[in-house]
Image (tube, rainbow, N blue to C red; front, side, top):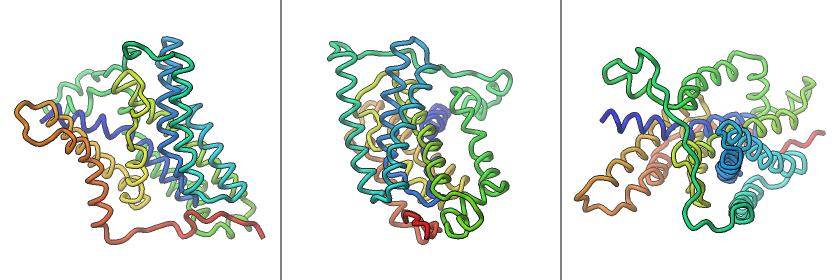
Length: 302
């Protein structure tokens, strides 16, 4: 049970990074539908950077750059040129898949055996990791998971306790008022997208540099869309997003645990699909959503 819960916390980490970033972009009025592609480019850029340089730090820097570049293109097309956000995001997700596959073959060819890097290691915090039950779960994790502990309260503080957080929320609710106050609405939205690109790049690299230590074109497998759904299910609130990410991380950890058990009569494919089944169930059973009023609506300055 302790191992399963520790795995659940680890698996929820990239989902939280992606969902929190999506929350900020959608609070500003933009749906980052390129999130799946940003995850994939982060995984690709992170692996290439780490494999070539031999440094995981360089890998994560490459991942951030890769994610930011994709969301920058998305922001220019959708925010500046007012193009359809869902169509643009879908196109960029397809482009990311093809581009990552093509560039991987250009750089590495077709390896006979999978190329690997040493994954990010766990760091046991002295004393705290020895606390019965709680220690191995919360205090024997990797660095990115430890950072996750601070992201949610920091996001809550920025969103609800700062003037810039008020600007972000107002941009998604009443962009005309923000414009009248002298704030550039499109600049706020593109800024949120660039920050989201950095977070999504880290989230994608988490799979290639922390969980697996390798890259394949199917490494993300729709988890960017799960992060997208967590933002909705968390009702665009930091702590709602946290609980959603933990729930999906637990579902994925349970799936992994059952897949490695002997004598299981249930096909492995069911456990692979478990997080996605949970997404559908929670979406259907959710009664109400506190959707930002201008979500997905381009702002045209009069």
